[in-house]
Image (cartoon, rainbow, N blue to C red; front, side, top):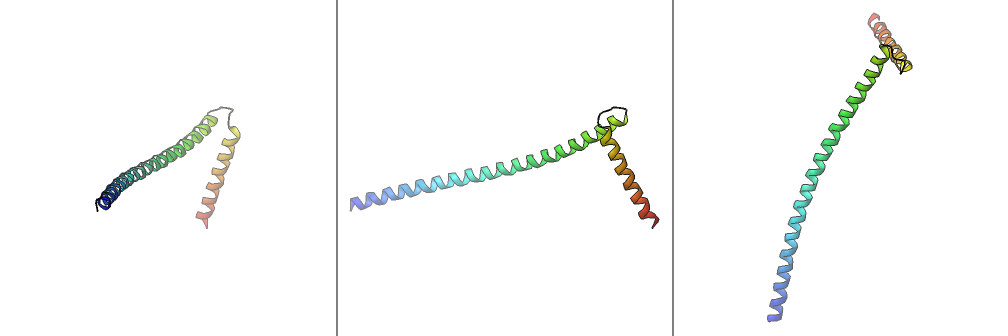
Length: 96
């Protein structure tokens, strides 16, 4: 009977050890999920900031061209023409 008792004790010890590892892994998994969520939020914020900076850069390029710079003149003319078309469309919509 002592052999069976030893086997049972060993099994109990191993089961307890497995439960302990399981709890540790679950906590680690939860921590990693939280870290992943935070990283996703940071990426989202940075993506929005990049888009804002791109828009500001484009605006600065156009402003620079309007001030007499030879760089990006074609883009500026295209943008102005696009704005004029939009204004003409709005006027046409209002007159109807």
